[in-house]
Image (tube, rainbow, N blue to C red):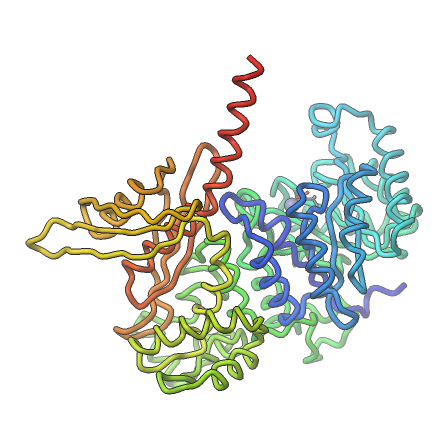
Length: 534
Ligand code: KIV
Ligand code: ZN
C-alpha cells in the first residue's frame, strides 16, 4: 500500500478517551447525539467506547454502531484490552455496524511491564500476536496499540509491531500515553518505525497522544511529516488528565498550512485539496455540543473554538483587520461555522418551521422529543423576540441532556436585591414521586437556591465549578449555566439554558444531582454489604 497519497484519517476518541476525564460522563442519548454530530463533521472513525467496561458502555457502542455506523457513515470502533473477554465484547457490540473496528492494546514500556502487567517482554510479544489474531477472527479491521510506546525500548516496539501486523493488524497506533514526548523525538520515533518494521507498509501508522506538556498537537504534526496517516484526537482536546490532541487544532493546522504539509503526503505543494475529510464548517457546532453535554468548558483563549479565538481587542489589530482581514487573521471565522448563527424563528413560528429548521441543522428528533423541545422553544420565544440557530441548539441540547429524570424541579422562586436577604423557595418532585417544598437564605440568589435544593434532596456534594455564559449577544440572551459537583473522588457535571439565569442555575444543579444520585445509592448499597460481611 502506498500511504503517501492517502488523506489523513481522523479518528475521534471523544466518546472513549475524552469521556475518561473527570465529570465528563455521558449517558447513551448524549453519546448518540455526539456520535451523530461527529458523523456530520466527517470524522473517518468514531471510537464509541470500551464495550467490556460496563453494560452502559456496551449498549452505547452497540447503539452508535446501529444508528451512526451505516454504509456511508464512519467506521465504528470499540477499545478492548488484549484479553479474550474484552475482544469478544467489542466484537459483539460492533455487530450492527456496517464498518466495525476492534482496537486492542497492551503496554510495552518496561515500567508498565514491571509494575502494572508483571509480565516479561516475551510474554507481551506473544499476547499481542495471539490477541490480534483472535480479534481478526471477528472482523477484518483491527487496530493495535502498544501502550506507553513513547517510553518503550524502540527495538522491542519494532518487534511487537511486526508481530501484530503479521497477525492481522491493519492500523498500528503509537500512543504517547503520558504526554512525555517532544515533536522532534516523536517524529524520529515514527521515522524509526517506518524504517525498522519490515511489514509496516501493510498497515496505517496512527498516533495517539496526551497533552500533559501542551505538545500533543505539535507532536502529531511532526508525526504526519514522518509517515503517520491517522490522528487520534478529541473535540476540544478533552480527555484523561490534560486531555488528548485536539481535533479542531489538528484539522485547522492541516487546512490552513496545507501547502506546507502537501509535500509530506506526496502532493504538489500548491494543491488546494483538503488533507482530511472533515467539513470544517461543523467544527464550532460540534465543539459547543461536546462542551454542553460533558460540562467541560472551553477556555476563552483556546485555539480555533475559544470565545476570543477570532476577537481582536487591540486598536492596532482592529485597524488592520478593518483595512484588510489578512493583516491579522490567518483563517476566516466562517471556515469553522462561527458566523452561521442566523436569526431564524420568532414567537409566531409554528411547529413546522421549528421542525424544518432543526432538520436543516442536522437534528433528527423523535415525535416526543420534538414536542418537548417545541414547548421549550415557545417558552423561550415568549421572552426573547428573535430565536437564532444557536438558541435552537441550546434548547435541543438541553432536552437531550435531561435524563435521568430522578429529581425534577417544579418551582423556583427567589427574592433578592441590595436591601434584601437573598431567599429562595423551591419545589422538587423526588424519584419516589413526592412533591417537597423548602426555602433557604443564602449569600446570593444562586446560593439560596442551592441551599434550598439541598434541604430537599439531602444529597452530599461539593460545588467545585459554576459558570454562566450567554448563548448569543443581547440583553435578552439565553444564559447557559454549567456546574460541576464533587462527591468522594467523582465529579458530576450539569448544564442548563434559560433566559432566566437563576432558573438555569437551579436546573443545572438538579441535572448534576441526577447524575450523582445513582452513584450515591450504589456506594451506599456497597457500604451496607461490606458492613454485613464484617
Ligand atoms: O493513552 C493511551 O495509551 C490510550 C491507549 C488505550 C491507546 O488511550
Ligand atoms: Zn489515551
